[in-house]
Image 1 (cartoon, rainbow, N blue to C red):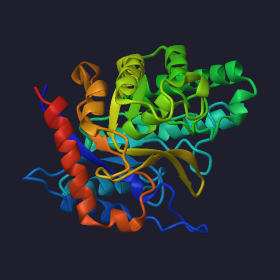
Image 2 (cartoon, one colour):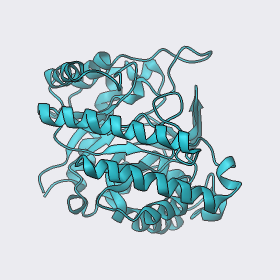
Image 3 (cartoon, helix red, strand yellow):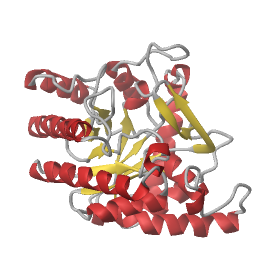
Image 4 (cartoon, rainbow, N blue to C red):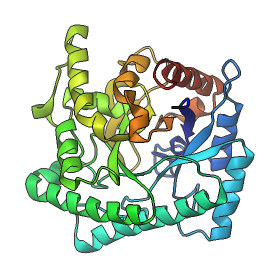
Length: 341
């Protein structure tokens, strides 16, 4: 395989941002691109960006010409486009994947929109690699627990329909494992959904180091905890290997991240793994070592790039050039250790 490309995510400028009390304003796409373009470590720069298909960065109903202009903007900053995030949540285009027929229809419409935009970017020559990301778009696990088996079955059926749509467009979907999404809130429940769909060519897993760390602790599913708070190194690594061995065969997209073991929410975004700067002194993860468990045989699963994910950082952190250089250095370390021939 050739060396993994290094991408930065644009959605940290959007997720948890807004005009509600206590929120900071969104950071524009162009500003996020400029911050990314300014980063450099020993001559290495970011190769591309991963991209959230919703306002204010993108109108998912934008015309072909408007989307081509966005592609030109991104390429003009020196970047390829990689993985895309479908606007599957209530309040965007979509709605819950375990909801009513109408809600599920909205979810599938969001996937169709994402596939349309992907096709335009692909044909324009701007998008070279990557998947389309989804999740169950059902915040929290309380409603899911009312009838776990039936609700998981509904999510599976919605994802099957979504995967068929993606396959018809030549795309692959990746379900992001994160403790705030019903039916995806533990490593075991996530595996049940992936196996229930059973379409690995069209629907796989997106592993994020920050979110999957909380899987090991069983934060929203104590019954699936692999370690307990206060664990030793000797306890952690076998547990981490058990989780990654289960989910790695499904993993088709990978996020480098750091986590301090806490949860965090902002705005409408429910509490989930708290992303931290790559050098956060409270970070629980050996980023390079943890990444190796997920990236083993990455090329065999079609992974061509890795992406940084740092949702819900304060704007002052995002505006600080040191933040992006530190992140880029962490990604270079991951690539050099695990992502070259």
